[in-house]
Length: 374
Image (cartoon, rainbow, N blue to C red; front, top):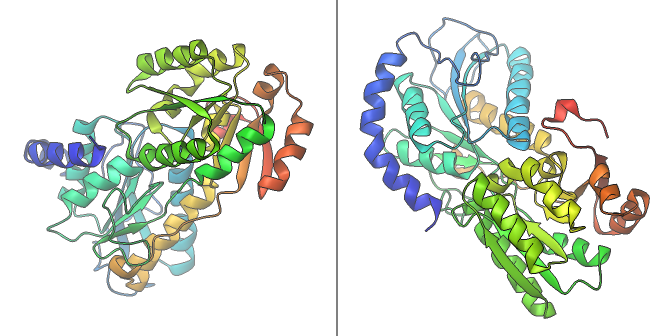
């Protein structure tokens, strides 16, 4: 079952109870984040203005940002959204009052967060990752509050938009669509003799459905055997990783799967010790120990998301007619420590991958991007 159906059913049941709790919690205006204090780009007591009206007269706009999990790539998006909005606010003479929350994948908390935003009458909601975007879409069907999503791999497949060019409702945003074939080509460039590939993912993650299907199509066309192992929590992911080692796979592929991403620090040494490179769909995997992360620049994704938010709130742009933004997926991020532990030479890998990517960069293992040099 896809997460979309689960979330929409859950949201319908939980919203009423959550609203009762959150109306009491929101009487003061801004929300105190479970991950720390609310970050405001120029705090103001001015009332929120009509988002359809052009601004520049000191108007204040309330924005609710909900990040799905505490993850390096997704955190990068939030940080860059807020930084870019601060720049835009200073340039345009307006204030963005931002309420930021991170439910860490808890559907009940996520429902409550969105109800908080509704009770606070935010001018716009931002959903980082597919499950949050789906929940926000369900919650705003009647109110029409604009929603801008970020890091949604397959907006059409998740039924968030009618099409990438014309979303058709109150929701649009930025996509981190993954070019699966390009990752497959990197796998076989590094090891042309690979005969068995492991596919590691969470079956409940919408972001994994299309990339895994594309990977199977690619491998079937080449006549390459593959083994699927899945996990829905940290313990299951570790078991799945150990099973792939026992399966004797030559490499492992994981798309932009938040469940696996959260567990990468706990599993990368399982693969490294077995000399199995882990190819993944985001640079945060490589930051957390995976051999390679391939995909979009998440800092840029956040800034582009902020530009879309500003276009809606300040310039009266209609989300229904704003095309979803997609990006060049050509950046390969290689963990140089893991590369060495696998017995590979980074300089050789860089030269090997360079013709297949727009950019190859090195990174070392850390929990957050601010802690890394590379």
